[in-house]
Image (tube, rainbow, N blue to C red; front, top):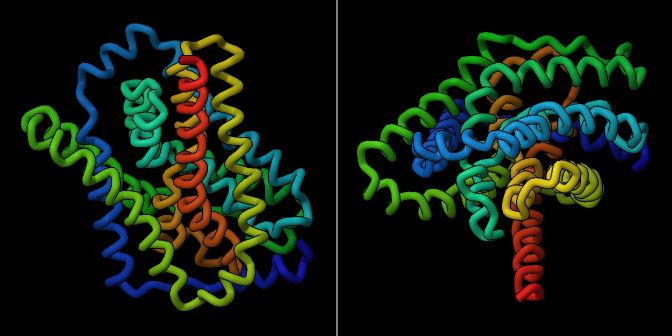
Length: 316
């Protein structure tokens, strides 16, 4: 990718009025409520009796993925713009994606472990998403020698905390309470919410980029390659850690999927609904990386699930 193309990607502008932003926030909150419908206190009790896989999953998501993403952004060098590199780090700093439990189910993975990892990473996201993004984002900007071009990354902690708490913390709590006191209703709602979450993200991306569709289509092949490499890295981290530490096959599948599927919807909300980048130059590269991640990890998740199922058929 040339510097000129990267600059064109950064110039893509996405603006949403208050109504559009509120719609995205409300739908994302409902999606997280749907995720929480499958979370029952007993799941945590069962999983934490053997905490090895949970600890490995948290290490993959919260430590290794942001760190290796930082290294990947440095390796890609001038092939990406600084804003695209920050977009990669933002996605890696987000908690597990809201469709990971669905993909784990399709993959015949350890669903209890998947739900636990999603719940824990989402709960910790209130603190760790801004912390990881601040640490690795600033390190990337300084290490890649672009600090003179880009302002210092400052995280408005209260603004980000409030956004994440409202969009993730409250719906997660309400969903767990619903699963606890209305189990029959929760079972009926789980599947519709899972499919709705996939449709939601596609609709959110279309809504966000409707005014820049031509520019987005011109650059999508470059974004595709960057996100493909990044997502492969994430999947490999989960699979490799599971293999090295010899966890059961079902747990290894879950670690692969949980590390490879990120809540990029939250990333878009942080980009569009907070003041993090108020003083930054055009940062369309962050937006397109985050948006395409959300579409691509659906495709990659289904692909990985198919591979796992084919492996089971060959074994039989």
